[in-house]
Image (cartoon, rainbow, N blue to C red; front, side, top):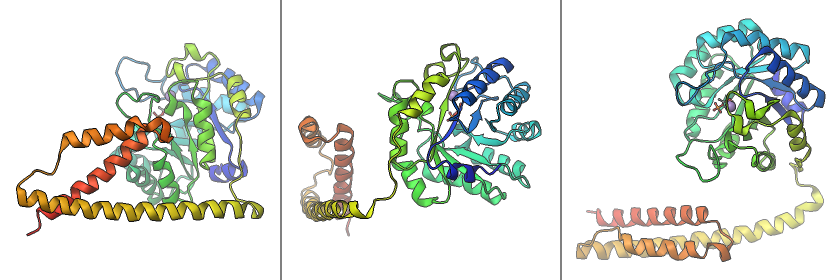
Length: 355
Ligand code: PEP
Ligand code: MN
């Protein structure tokens, strides 16, 4: 099959659904039937080999499950996809007739493993979906895609599934939207879909994250779907039933990607205003850094260290305490002030160390 073509034909709502893990022939068949009945799914997913963070959890049924997945797909006229992480997986999946492969986040992070898969795929024309690496590193993601391209694989799709962080207050994997946005800029030919299930790690935020991805021009979603989610052998807390999937998909709004002629005037006016403000922000930052240079000079002459932690703590908390009334999120204020502060330190450092 030609996956990229299929995604384009779907005009931005290509749906990959199915269980986190294939558990039994009956389970995957029942899910395939429900998904086919509601007619919105284009690709049936099912994990056969599961990369688990800790041992002694369910690691997938293994190759025995491949014919269950492939047969379920055939029976309900859905192409199927599974995750591969090494040569043996690739060989078994190709032999079993899996239509599309995906590379999981832990594998994308490992160039040796990706190269091994790319070598095993030489001479085939199977489509491959590449999830982002678990760490927020755009180049690792692009690098994995390049390794596959060098092996002659051209039907490639990217999946954004978020990035590992310790104790994220909201998500299982932090979305870091700026990374898939940068990916779209650099890899404009590769369609990208979103995996809200692994970003959220729960059911309640799926709708919101799926909508956000569509508003950022993603071309589809991968959502883990199970007939008895609470009893699922892996990722139970984030899977939803096929009928909840249908509700979720029906609730998504597909907005226009192109601004119409008659809307352009308004948008252009606002853009000009924003550019004026950005120009001012840059001028002010330039002025601010000139002052940092002066302070750097003074600290050098008087033998004072650059970092004044107490003063910085006060500055941070002053602006953070105004977060609500300013309409700026704490995360943004923190990131902005950190960047400004770091640049200021770099300026002072350069002044201090000039010979
Ligand atoms: C999965 O899709 O079930 C999976 C293991 O995904 P990820 O590689 O994104 O963790
Ligand atoms: Mn999963």
